[in-house]
Amino acid sequence: MRKRIPVEERLWRKVDKSGGPEACWIWMGATTGTMGYGVIQVGTHDASKHTRVHRLAYELLVGPIPEGLVLDHTCRVTRCVNPAHLEPVTFKENVLRGDSMSARWARRTHCDAGHDLAEDRAAGRKRCRLCQNEWHLKRYHARKRGD
Image (cartoon, rainbow, N blue to C red; front, side, top):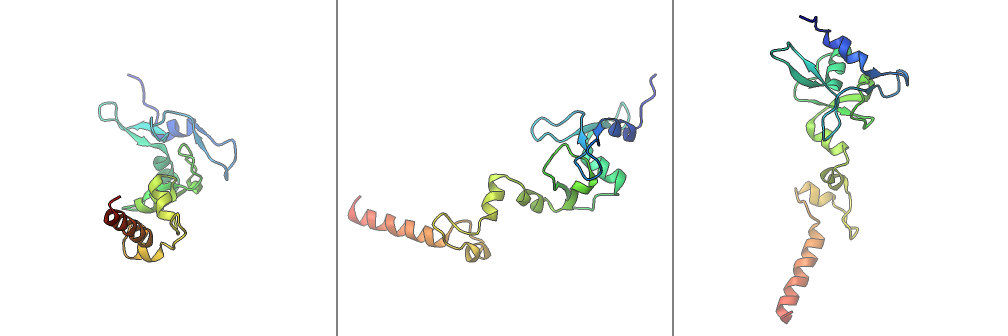
């Protein structure tokens, strides 16, 4: 039976640190299909599972990830395992820092017509109240005219 190489050794064998300590340390092994996060097999042959390499590297070099937090790639490179580029944040903060449609909408401060969204956001509204009122008013008058 072959001797299994420790996970730490297998991890660092596949990390390119050629850019130095401030650069991204790129995982050169297997990745998830959709998001491109690096993965590595951990555990025994009979009870193995895949874990994300940025989480493993962070835990090896920094320590445990605080309960209820996820790691945000501040460099935006999902294959990066440099712990200097990983910050524990809430899931919500991680999503809002991203570039998804919901994150872009959440960061907006004004609607397309230029109205300030601060009051609407504070009230828990998802749409601009002024634009919504204008739309309803136009619709009301159009129905009244028989359009």
